[in-house]
Amino acid sequence: MTQPLPQTGKKQHATIREVAEMAGVSQMTVSRVLNRRESVKTSTRERVDRAIQALNYRPNLMARSLAGGKSLFIGLIFDNPSNNYLGELLVGALNRCREVGHHLVIEDFSASSNEKDIDALIERLGSAGLDGMIVMPPVSEDEFVLARLRAAGLAPVLIAPRETPQDGVSVAIDDVEAADLVTQYLIDRGHQRIAFVAGPTAHSSARRRHMGFTHAMARSGLEMNDALFAQGDYTYRSGMVAGDKFFSLDDPPTAVFASNDDMAAGVIAAAQRCGMRVPDDVSIVGFDDTAIASAMWPQLTTVRQPIAEMGYQAVDLLAKFLGTGEDRNAEHNIVLDVSIVERGTVRRR
Image 1 (cartoon, one colour):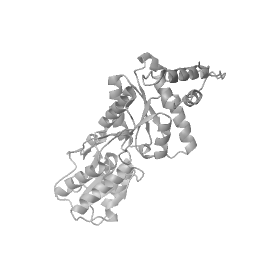
Image 2: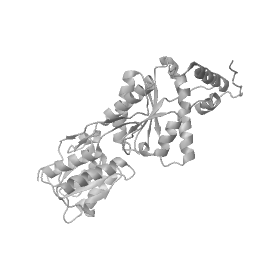
Image 3: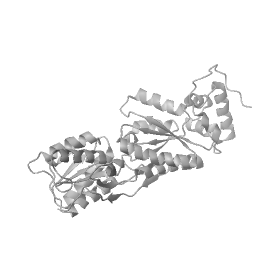
Image 4: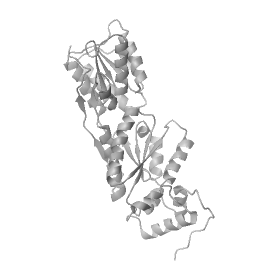
């Protein structure tokens, strides 16, 4: 005969971790019980239910009960990405959540916080009753954070991780191949003196784009030097600074490849400020095909990565594992195709 768990007198602010400790199970198991997953043994479910009663535990997301346990609460955490990139990904994730009746909770997250702050934030996310997480770069590259999320039972789907995880779930593109593709596009149009604006070194996707650029240039035997390189941070302002550097040279580039659209827009502004015509005097390409690419003038030729589709697919992957109990430690990595969108910022030499 099982013995009742002791009453603690605690009436509020209990966490999912405390429930798990009292019941002698993992936080993931508590989450499964809360969501009425059939994969939990009856005896385990009873222990968790008694711990929930003893601690007076209440998930913060009370709307779960209104959906009969079928509606998922998905967290999305980010750390200072491009506003346009974040906006595009949110559109895809929110659209899919709306279609299937899930809910998205957005959390600003600083991957540079100390370990104590990270633990406190993840505990708060777990206590909120979230079922799983969509993790954007560069947080998706932080192994400490990812390990803490997994330990808390918050199944992470990674957007553009450092490398394809062999024991996890991710949605990404091949940044090396995409950057090689657009660099070759410029070379095929007669450009040889091509400048490059890199993204932040903390982002592995930025490093891979630089790699793709150098591969294409080396394959064609074209020169690369410091004068034609600028370190950016995915912001419009850093693109302007890069453009000012390039267009002040005695022999300026005939083309510039900026690692995202925001920086490409800054390069275009710098060119216009210097009296250079785009694309007559200099061709410029970006990367992402966010809203700014078609909002500026001239409209930007860029690499289209399906950012909204990445958010859409991430929600689907997370719902698949949480809804079916399929092994999340198995490899489930989606690599989406890219394409070049030709607009008005590239001219043949």
